[in-house]
Length: 263
View 1 (cartoon, rainbow, N blue to C red):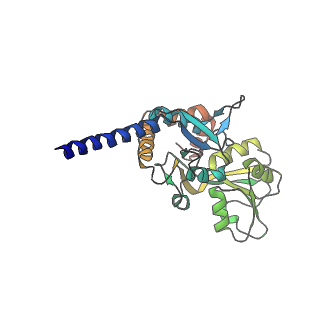
View 2: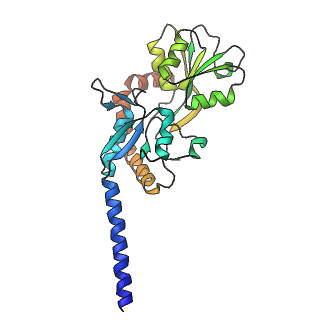
View 3: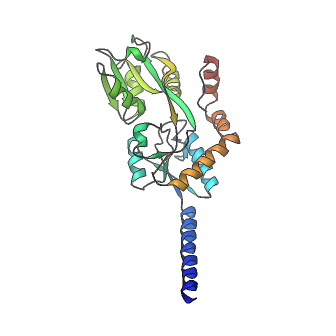
């Protein structure tokens, strides 16, 4: 009888410890990694405060989880390392879910569809992605992106310019030093608008992609909660509102061109 009572008490104590640990984890800030240099998704306002589509999404996720959100500004090519070394809890940074990355980290369900497109120098002969791989072609990519991976594995004849910043790659194209910059269609559209006389935008994606929230392998409960949040957020019109607030011109233009919008 005493042994039975002791077993029951021990089981209750273990359960209480588990509940206490779970409650403590829930109360901890949710550390969200992103690179704040990709407007309108990840950026800062005039006062230096994080803002943008991904910041709003992170804040809504924090409310859903009942956790304060702490935005950690980390260079894009360092985000996965920061996640794996537990410096952050998740990545919400326009991160494309790829098989290569999935071997290293876990992903939520996709929340946005996009694809690789081309910002092309106005005098370049490039008319499509098929024209990129040719002797004498110079193709700019941002380090660590899927555009970089595509170019490194698919373009064997052209010369790659691997740059740390999107703005540097855009400048190479605008100045006619590179034939094209491989990036997502929304950014290509926005950068063409900034340099309308020096660039052309080939917006229809030549390779479709999806963005998802990056998580650690083994964080199954958080992944479940994140997926539950994304489903609810979509059903309640959260993504539509983000598009209206941050991308109204892009939505209208893509619709007029018959190109599916991202949300």
